[in-house]
Each structure stands twice: as C-alpha cells, then as structure tokens.
Amino acid sequence: MMAETSPIVEQVDRSASQGWLRRVGRLAAPFIGLFLVLVIFTAIEPGSFPTVRNGQTIAVQTVVVGIGALGMCFVIVCGGIDLSIGSVIALASVAGAMTLDAGYGPTAAMAMAGGTGAFCGLINGGMVTALRIPPFIVTLGMLGIARGLAKLLAGNQRIAPPPESLGWLEGFVDKTPAITWLQVAPAAWCLLVTAILAGFVLRRTAFGVQVVAIGSSEATARLCGVPVARTKILVYVLCGLGAGLAGAVTLGRLGVGDPTTAVGLELQIIAAVVIGGASLSGGEGGILGTMIGAFMLSCLSAGCTLAGIDNSIQEIIIIGGIIVAAVTIDGLRQRRNR
Image 1 (cartoon, rainbow, N blue to C red):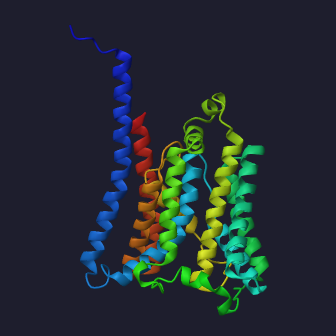
Image 2: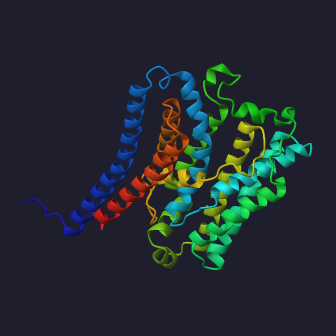
Image 3: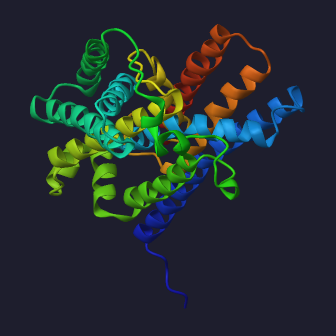
C-alpha cells in the first residue's frame, strides 16, 4: 500500500510552490517592462538609442539612482520609507565639494560624503525607533533639514572646487573610461559588484532574514528575538550611506557641489524599488528587481531625451505615471495574495 501524504505536508508543499511562483512573478514584471522600453525606443530612435555611446550614458545615469535604490530596498523591505534621500544626496555633494575646496583629496571627499549620508541615516533610524515616529514623518522632516543645510553651507550657490582636485573621482564616473576594455564608467562596475553583495546580504545572511522578518510582521519578529531597533537603525544608516556615495558620484559628474541637485530624485529611487517587485507594506523585495527598475528608469529617461520629449512631459511620464502605476500594481498584488 502507498503511504498517504499528510495534509500538513501537502499544505507546506503548496505554500512553498505559491511562494516560488510569487517570486518569479515579481521578477517577471520588471523584466517585461524593461524589454518593452528597449523595444519601443529602439523602434522610435533606431539610429541613436541602440548605440554604445547611449549605453554608456545610461550606465552612468543608472549609478546614482541605483546606489540610492540599493539602500532604499533594505528600508522598504523592512517596512519603512526614506523620503529624504534626494536632499541627503545634495547635502553629501556639498560636503564633498567643501572637502575638496579645503585642499583634501577625492578619497577624503568621498569619505566625507558617505559619512554625511550615514549620519543623516542614523538620525532617521534613531528617531523612528527611539521616538516611534512614523518613518514618513521623520524622513519628510529630514528632507527639509538636509536641503536647507546644504543651501546654508553652500551659501545658496554651487561650490566649485579646483578641477584638478577632483582627481580619480572625475574619471570614476566618466562614461568613456580611460581603461577602454571597461566599456562603461568604473562607477557602473562598482554598482554591479555592490548590488551582488547587497543581494547576498539580503537573502543569505542573518541580518537580511531579520530585515524581511521585521517587514513581514514587526510584532512577530520581536517575539522571535529579532533585535528590531538595532536592525532598523542599521537599515537607515545603510540607506544614508548609499545616498552619501550617490552624492559623491554626483559631485564627480557635475564637478560642483550643488545644493539644488537631486530634487525629486527620491521618487525615482522609490519607484525603482517598487517596480522591482518590492512591496511598500514591507516584507517583499529583492536587489535584482531593484537594479532592473533603476536601469529601466534610466533607459526611459534617455529614450525620452533622444526622442525630443519635453522635460515637463518626462516628469509626467517618469515621475508621475511610473510611480502611480508601480504603486497600483503593488496594491493589486497585495490584495491578490490575501
């Protein structure tokens, strides 16, 4: 006689199968979206969009959004949000420019930018956990504080350090690198390596498991012994660090510390994470999907520019339409999974 399968085993197998199908579905959507964007703009601009030079430009554009999106992915999966990331990028670029202007090298400037971002993230995480203020409110406040502080430090103008002081930082984001076999800016390769490491941390380490657990159910995670406060603070510090490094990259691209840069960039970064399959309610998301989302937004921006679409229309399509569509899809996905 054949042994009967336990109903509990059948239920576990069914749940595992459904979970696998959900993960595949979350990854399929951004891949399909990216494919459609590439096909559409290749058809519209066949002589300029599918070119090496445009690919190099898109790679550089993806770096800033991608670095910010890596940290934001951890925050959103943990059940939080960081609306201050665009302003922190601007503050970090100003801090880096001031470091160069003071006579220090590009390495010190990048360290200062990264440290500035991490400190802002520490404040965000500390207030969210210690004061139990909703992340939306805390980071909205930091958005104004960081932007105002950037303008104050810069005297409401751009800080332009001596061009020679940029050193390797300028070549780091050069879309036509001196090392020709790299094909794209070294910053793009660094983003790829960082994304692989971030994916490993999120999926294969105890810290990553804790982040997902908190996003799924903070109360349950706390009962299971997960250090909720410490994990949340680390997540916001990581997001701030990513914003700081994005600020250093922005400084290398522009050659100046601009307190008005990255206005509205937080919306693109959040959109990249949500397009990649993350849920704004927490507990779901991944690095691969996030990087696809960031790359898709950069392709969309580059394609609109090549097609001669006005900047105001681009804002409607990229910032407005894409975010609304991504959040709508997330809401439908959540209702379907209930």
